[in-house]
Image (cartoon, rainbow, N blue to C red; front, side):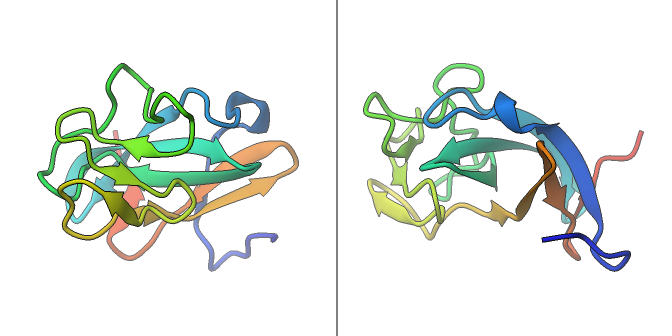
Length: 126
């Protein structure tokens, strides 16, 4: 997909920076007026990104910096409560969850991963 002038996209990282089941690439976003941490991962060859916020309690998920996958590499897991999420959709699959993770749309173009703004999701301004 090629972005148009109506599609605000923001470069995030090189495609090679995301390895299936590997470390995430963290980034900051402005979500509903607040600066929030987000992360991008690769699962089954596709890049995915979410706010770094458990749906059970608004705490960051990673159990070590930039580590979100469980030991099997199959699930995204909240280190605090053990909630597990489907990496491709953010849907809760087990543990104490109230809904799924907030998904951020990604585009992979010419070896670069980009994230797309939404009406309540913008880049952090410095």
